[in-house]
Amino acid sequence: MINSELRELYQQVILDHNKNPKNFGKIDPHNHSAEGFNPLCGDHLFIYLQTEGDVITNISFEGGGCAISKSSASLMTEALKGKSITEAKEFFERFHNMVTGQASEDDDFEDLDKLAIFQGVRDFPVRVKCASLSWHTMIAALDNNNKSISTE
Ligand code: ZN
Image 1 (cartoon, helix red, strand yellow):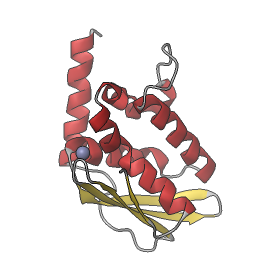
Image 2 (cartoon, protein in one colour; image 1 turned 90 degrees about the horizontal axis):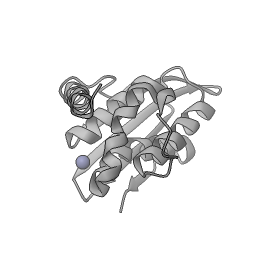
Image 3 (spheres, helix red, strand yellow; image 1 turned 90 degrees about the vertical axis):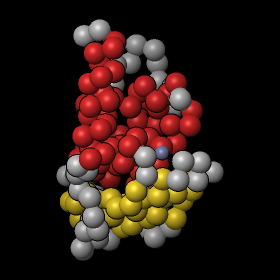
Image 4 (cartoon, helix red, strand yellow; image 1 turned 30 degrees about the vertical axis):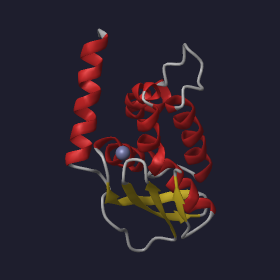
C-alpha cells in the first residue's frame, strides 16, 4: 500500500474507535484503577483492571478526550484483555518506544498489530502524550493502585 492509503486506513481505525470505543465504562468488580490526565490536550481517562494472579481478565476505560487518546485507550483494552501483567508491561515498552521514536528504523511493529497505527504520532510531539496517556495510566493502575497521573 502506498503511504496515503495507509494514512487513510489509520485515520479510519482511529475515527471508528473514537466513535464506538471498545471496553468503555467502569467494570465491576475491578481490583486496579487509576486516573490519567493530559493537561496539554484536556484528555482525562480512568483505567480499570481486574486481575487474577498474573492475568488481566478484564480491562476497561472511562472518560473523554481527543480522538487519538480515546482510540488508543480502546485499542489498548482490546490488546491487553487476557494477557499477563508481564506481557502488558512489554506491550507498554514497545508502544512507548514506537510513539516516542526510540525504536529502530526498520522496526515494523508487526507484533503490536492494530496498535501500529499510532506510529505516525511520533512526528507530532503534542499527540504522543494523547496516544500514550491510557498506557501510562494502565501501568499506574497495576503498580500504584488508585493513583492519578499527569503527563505534565
Ligand atoms: Zn489528546
